[in-house]
Amino acid sequence: MAASRTPLKVFVTQIGLHEVIVAAPSQREALKAWGVTRNLFATGRAHDTRDRAVCAVALAAPGQVFARKHGSDKAFRAVSANDKAAAREGDGLSDDTSK
Image (tube, rainbow, N blue to C red):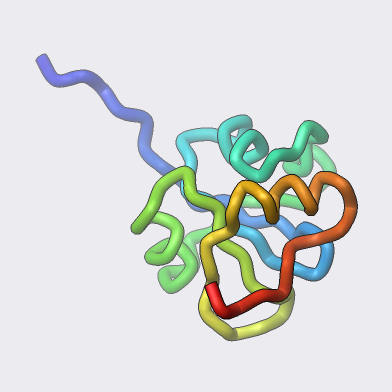
C-alpha cells in the first residue's frame, strides 16, 4: 500500500514590502518556512491561494520560499536563508533581483 501524502497548498503573506509565497502541506509548515512564529493566518495576514500563476511557481519547488515586491506583477524569486533571517530581524527581504 502506498504511503498517503498530504496535498500541498500554496500560501501567501506579506513580509515588509514583499509578497511571499510557499507550497506547504499545512499552515504550520508555511509559517515555519517563512521563519515566522506568530500565527499570521489567525490574524488574516496570510491565506491560501488558487491563483494559477502563483501556484505554478510555488509548486515547482515545494518548501522553497519565493518573494516579489508587494503589488508587483514581476516574477517571484527564490528567497535565501539569509533573506529570511533579515526579515525576522525587521530588515525585510533584500531587493537584489540579480539572483
